[in-house]
Structures are given as C-alpha cells and as structure tokens.
Length: 80
View 1 (cartoon, rainbow, N blue to C red):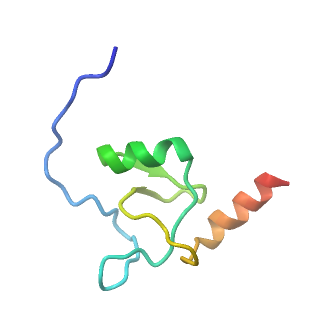
View 2: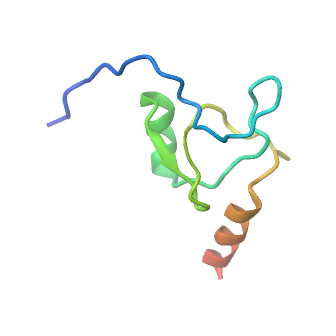
C-alpha cells in the first residue's frame, strides 16, 4: 500500500544559509544516503547530509566538484 499523494504549497525550497554561486549552483556538494537521493530529487523532500546540513536534492555533482569538508571527513572515518 502506498501513501496518498499530497500537493504541497509553492515555497522556496532552498534552505536559508545555503551558499550558492550566482547561477544557483551549489558551492559544494554533501554526502547523503544513496536511497534518499532519488526520493528527494523526485518529491522535493529534504535530505540530511553527514555534516547535518538539510536541503532538497536539486543538482548532481560532476567529477571534480567541491565536496563539503565536514562530510568528507565523516565519510572517510566511516570507511576505516
């Protein structure tokens, strides 16, 4: 059984304090649980990065994109 579909009011989905460049591209990307990325991209739901940043997934990183240093540090400590 699936959850009923709801229509959300139109709101600005960029969380306050998110740093972006002039063309609305994020200055850095964060590590997020894989299973939450597609859900957020499709539904606009918020995800929580390893560093605690909360935001909707709107862009996908390209090779060489800058990564949040806090997320990277936490991720690397998880692999050990």
